[in-house]
Image (cartoon, rainbow over all chains, first blue to last red; front, side, top):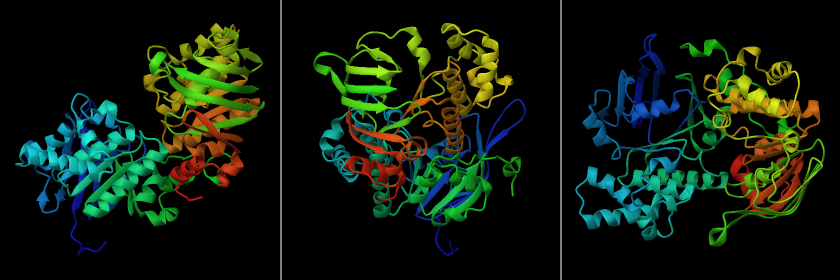
Length: 283
Length: 250
């Protein structure tokens, strides 16, 4: 990426620490990256700090955790020194986030329509009729055939895939600049997964927003995103173009690719990842 | 080893009764590893629970490990020694208040094994965990280690059939590789018959000999794993699953 392209998001030295009796423990260590309005993947295993990185970008690091960054900008805005009110003004309007399981992200006792309108109420001066029209419209954009019915539905009436579409609708109603999708399809069936991914793909292209897709599923992210950050124990250990995944240089990335069952691995043992303590050190 | 004939499984009763499995037929030979794939709600886990003797609301005929099962009748205790199951969520399948030692000892005692001490040590060794794990609690273990314990607990009873319900879905890819290697090694060393349920076609293609594809309660296609990985599939649903899980078109 050349330096002349305007960056949507630039992150430098992002660190998240949690206090412990033995001193502060860093779960995200000195993470730096830049992205434009494209598709960026973050891949890592459980505990690699990928979700905590996403939370930090939303200003949602749970206390007593602390987030620090030497430089954190979204467009022209500096996020590094934002106060809680500043973050609230930003979330939903400039940055949206989709989480793994719509069953837990949606409010079970509110109709979908009300939950979409809540974002509009918080961030804009819309009349009741305008809010409703906008909510129905965004439900139609996420590929729901009967948006009026969906508007009145409660989360328990929806399947996993439909719930995730409703979640995407809530996040997109204010056309954010950046959408963070943290394991958006892990709770879904493989076929529904493809449908939701192609929906996110279409919306990203149509709206020209930035997208960060976070997942443990390396092949899925590689199919979907242009560039991948590989995280290990809180650090980005490799940044790689998806098309050049087979040329990965870091042994951890190579190991992640190699340990997947494939037609050629049939009947033989899968290569097992040998973790090297040196990977945890900054290079 | 496993003979399933015209099995239907129902959940609930009356007007809300749900027909989870429709007229399922399958045969698994001794020493074979059979894979059952399908999307959520396709009935694969419902069918597996019938084979494990955990379901009562089914009809049809089932012979498993030489035992002829009757719908609605709880199988004898000895049946569970011969047919063991490993579940998806390693966090939910171990009692958090029992040590690993107790988790393994319970099954062995229940089925009348002698020299339990030695068997527990062997079982831990077989799954690659040392004796130091014996007196730990589940919360001190990672997901992969807990799944090893669940496999050790099942394998310690020297079953003839192992039923596996998405045993690696909750695990990271590198840990999945270790667990799959372990399962394949145990299968080889003991001529174990296994039935492996998963939604991941690449996992099924890796470990199984034959595969059944389920959609909305029906087994819509049966094929060999060679045909599956080679993309030689007939049913449209299998093709869609294959495209969705591997990303390559068939």
